[in-house]
Image (tube, rainbow, N blue to C red; front, top):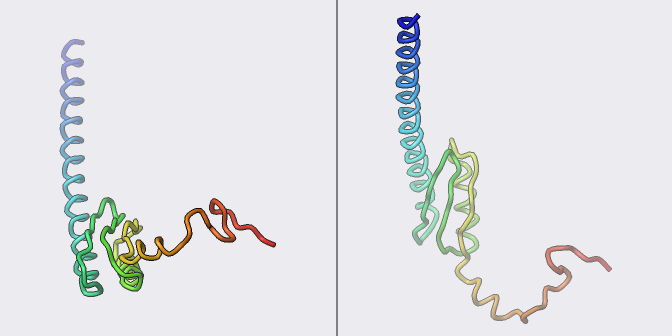
Amino acid sequence: MKLLTVFAMAALAAGVYHYRRQLGRAGHARERSDEMLAEAVRSAVTEKVSRPVHVRCVRGIVTLRGTLTAVERDRVLATALAVPGVAQVTNFLEIEDSAERLSDEPVGDLGPMQSGIATGP
């Protein structure tokens, strides 16, 4: 009976060892895949803009950061979504002239929209 218990424990230990090795390999493959996808997005995006855009990818979700014009931002978002393997794009791109536009608007005046809720006549 003790011999059977020893064999069961050895089999369990071997199973855990092989499971952890496979898990580690999958994590490294995913990291490489994310790096390759980020590089593909980065190379596609650099052709569309005049300023640097920071690209990060985690599990197919691409995050973009930087300051661009509105036209460049739209081009960059469309280009990033068109790269094969991109599941989603998180947009943290800022528009370079947004500070000038904000200073022209009166403070507290949201026009027809208050707190994001459309109000009709």
